[in-house]
Every structure is written in structure tokens, then in C-alpha cells.
Length: 455
Image (tube, one colour):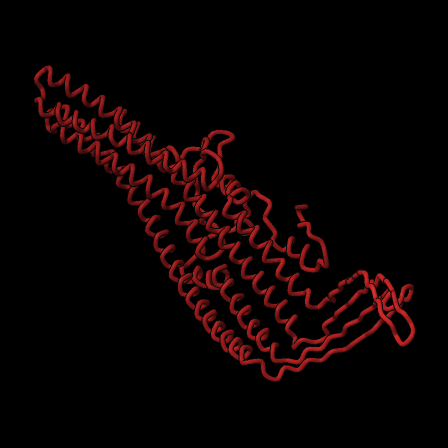
């Protein structure tokens, strides 16, 4: 009975008991990953670079200004009629030119809207990376709990088998069992020790992945709980939410918008362009020493393309084909998300059933082990029967741990596949990253090379 109770307590160590004060919780681990994961932070940096494309597109609305200056030396020698000429001048001057586009076939409008569509698409890509990061962190957290509990089970199993071997040898010494019984107990103990080594190796591997995903070594992990409060009530509701909110689908729709706007950009190349140019110049020593002049002009220009080799027409046709491709990709992504939701839902339902079945199996094997031990004491069971019952109980405990881990991880998987495994939706204790803040800081900047964070 004492041995069975020891195995029973070890099996649920990481999943049911209350964690120690100050223990790392699953929520705090996810918050760490959200704030410090290198893959997620690199995607945020990439999005900030995409934000700049809006400012680059809006530059088409603004004037361009340039200043030109020149200076030189000129010497003239010769004769005009009876007059001898020998002049040395230093011609130079400076001027400022301002160009302003007035009309370019709405190309700047289309390029700006296209850049904004790309920003929105990349924001959804960030959200997808965020969900993947949080899911990987949750999975690695639960894997460490699973492997810790499994290692504790395997170590306790070694202790139980050592005690079993000691009793078997005592009974062999008094003639109650044979040498075969002792050998069976020894073999089972050797196998259990090898399982301890395998469990230790698996735990070290899980700890390494935990460190990679969360950024710190695991210390005193508290029990993990399923994310059931964010799981929809039915598969149909889950599919409906996913098709509306999943970032992969939304990113694809924004990509379609960007592709359609690229058609307009290409079509604008066939439109007339109109602009105005203003120039102010000051010249010195143009022909004779000491002379100078000032000039100012305002010139309007209109350019109407007639035929330019057919490149523009090809680019328009190409852009239209890319729109068709983007729409097909969006449909593919909808089908993919729907499939992922159905698969994740099925795994979650199976995990729930597996937990109940494993709990019943553990209870039955506990009763069976106690009965076999009592029967072995009166000679109705062999040592092998006891060892087999012990192994059955161990296996059912391991299966329960696996089922409990899957129960938690699959709940996170469902929430991820419907597009809601985000910091904002799950209210994790961390300040959410706002991509709009950087966008608003740079979209209307007319000048400056420093980034908003001071670099």
C-alpha cells in the first residue's frame, strides 16, 4: 500500500498540487516570452521598417528642393577690331530649384494606400508570430512539467523495485521463491534504472527548449491550467471565429488589397503628369569682371505619354495576374485555417476523454496492484505477477501525465487556431506592444534620420 501511494502522489505532482510561493506560473512564463523572445522582437523591428514605406510613398505629395552652386576661373585673350582683350574672371553663382508634382495619374495616392495595406498585412503577420511564440512557450512549459513528473515517477519506481528485490531475496533465502523470481526482480529493476536515464535526458532536452522559448531556466514551475475560458462552445463557433479573426486570413486579404492597388500604380504610368518648377539664381562674373545678374522663373510642365515600348502595358497585365494569385492564396489560407481548427478541436476532445480514461485506469490498477500483493503474500500470485501489476500501474500513471499535458496544450492550440492566443485577448500580465504607436510617429515625418527610439 505504501508503495502504491508513493507512485500515486508522484504522478500528479506537477499538475494538481499547488505550486510554492513565488513559483513561475504559466501566465508569467508567457509574459516573459512575449516581452523577450528574439523571433518576436525581430518581427517587430521588421514591421517598423515596413512603416517607413508609408512615409516614402507620401513623399510624392511633397516638393523637392535643391540648391546648386558653382565657381570657376576664366581667362579671355584676343582682339576685337582694334581693341585688345585680356580678361580674367571668376564666374560663379548659386541657385535654388523647387519642383512640385501637381498630377501623376493618382500614382502617389495608390502607392500610399498600397503601403498602408502592406503595413496592415504585416501587423497581422506580427500577430501570427505572437500566437506562435505564446503557443511554443506554453508547450515548452507543459513539457517541462510533464518530464519532471515522469522523472519523479521513474525514480520512485526504482525505489519500489529495489524494495521488491530485497523482499524477493529474503523470501528466496527462506525457500519461499526460486532463483527465477529473484532474476525477474533484478531484470525489472535494471530496466527501471534505464528508464530513469531516459527520463533525465528528455527533461534536459525540454529545459533547453524552455530556455530558448521563454528566455530563462525553469525554476519551481506552478501547475498549468487549460485555457478553457477562451475556447468556443462548439466546433462550428470555433470555425466561424477563426475565419473572421485569424491573422493569416486577414493578412491575405490585405495582400489582395495591396495587389489591386499595384494595378492602379501600373495604370498611372499611362496617365499625363503635370508639375511646376520654380528657380531662383544669382550669377557673378558671367562675362566681365564685376558684372552680376539675378534670375527667377516659374515653369509649368505637362507630359502626356503616347507610346513607350509597351513596358507599361506588360506591367499592368502582370499586376492583374498577381491579383488573381493573391486571391487564390487567400482562399487557400481560409481552407488551411479551417482544417487546423478542426484538427485542434479533435485533439482537445480526445485529450479530455484520455484524461478521464487514464484516471479510471490508474484507480483500477491501484486496486489490482494491492490485490496482487496480498495474493502474493499467501502464495496465490508469483513475483512476476506483482512486477507486471506494478508496471501496469506505472504505465497508467505515465499515460495520465501525458493526457494531462495534452489537455492543457491542446486548449492553447484551439485558441491559437481561431486567432485569439494574443496578449490583448487573454489579458496576460504584460504591457502589449502597440505597432500603431510607431506608425503614427513616422508616417508624416518630413525629415530626420533618427528613429523614434533615439537611434
